Image 1 (spheres, rainbow, N blue to C red):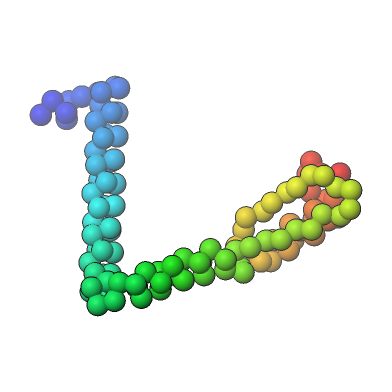
Image 2 (cartoon, rainbow, N blue to C red):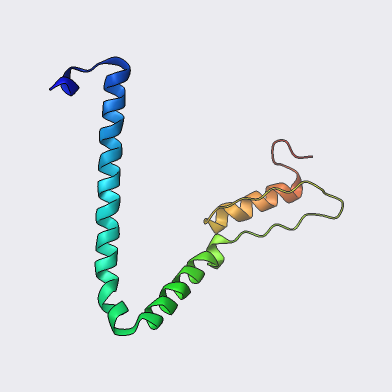
Length: 106
C-alpha cells in the first residue's frame, strides 16, 4: 500500500492517525465494559446506582489526603497552592513556604 511507502509529513500524519485510531478504539472498549458492568445494577435499581456513583465521586473529590491547606502569615499577599496527594511532601512544602525557604519566595 501507499501508506507503507509514505515518508516525511505524510508518513507522520498517517502514523498519528493510526495511534489516535487505537486510542479511540481502546476508549470505546473501556466505556462499553463499564456500561455492561453497571447495566444490571441500573436495571434493578437505577436511582440507587446513581446515588452510589455520586457518593463515590464525592468521596474521591473530597478525600482528605488530596486536600492541602496552607495558611499564609498576616501581610503576605502571594498564594502558593500545591496539589499533591503525598501528605509528607505537602507538609514539607508548607513548612518551606512558612519559613520563606522556597525559591522565589521572600
